[in-house]
Length: 400
Ligand code: CTP
Image (cartoon, rainbow, N blue to C red; front, top):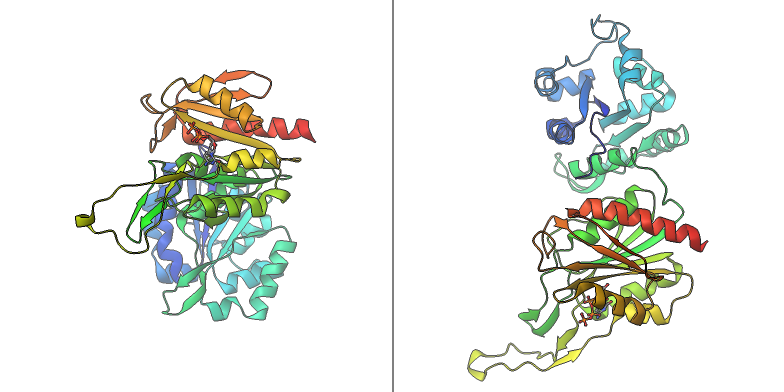
């Protein structure tokens, strides 16, 4: 798996918000990715959760007082600022946001922020009324103007019982945002459309046909393209996966819906990566549930081939297809590359161990339009996605 956070120093500043109770989980997940974490807590944070919890988790003292002598960091606010590769303030209360916006330094957290020349990520978390108060919004704008990074809070039910925007984002999203600081932002200039998952075609109101695609490959590509700075649209059929952080997610069910969503974005994107396993056939739809006693014979008609259509209407776009095969993957992939007017196709033999649907890994061969082939070893899908994006970047650079 990609290990961007390995040995990275993450300084976590916890402030007085109820979401402080979720920080042990954040720390454990960061540590699982190899990061080293140290914690600063404000007085308010200590009213919600004890420092002992965090010293036990991190193996370090929890830093709370700018005037205390900590032997491992004698000038505590500057030493911690220097130690950090990134300073994450989560949850960030309205009070701390106001202090940071003013450049105040009246406690350890704000003094460290002032002394820190590494990226500072602020994750506000508060009641929606507080969050949308003009003063708080003005402070957040000011933070952004002053070089802080601010993460939008999530929408949903809050601890205070209200619904709205103000929740601390999901831990996975905070981690994805932190990881972005360690990715090269080399796809920043590009807009990329990715499709993923299966499509479903209804037989009647309760039955449908579909395929075994899990969506993992397409989701990994979308996630990493966004992490590398691309503007990403992910059009996906039904999967068990949650949309990656930072992508514009469009959920569809049928091949027709996928086609419409894809063509709506097509004119403005630089590349299309069709990782979806699009249903090739659709039954004639019966509006009433078909009764068992009546028997069931399916007449299937062909769906449209979205990628072939994209090939026909291609202008500046780079087109990348996938070919999951059971027979002769390379010959079949080459045929599809030519027929669909693709720039690149990724072939895999789904009967090989570790390379089929739903697996965490994949073993692929890339075939370029000029006939060049690259055969990659078995890798995690995220690693395949990362390398694939390197190649796509190369092709995009050559096209412009
Ligand atoms: N594809 C598509 N629309 C379809 C079928 C496939 O856009 N109706 C895309 C897939 O997303 C993939 C590529 O075309 O990127 C190849 O898909 P695949 O299912 O391997 O091949 P098919 O074109 O369906 O051909 P065959 O059934 O002969 O294998």
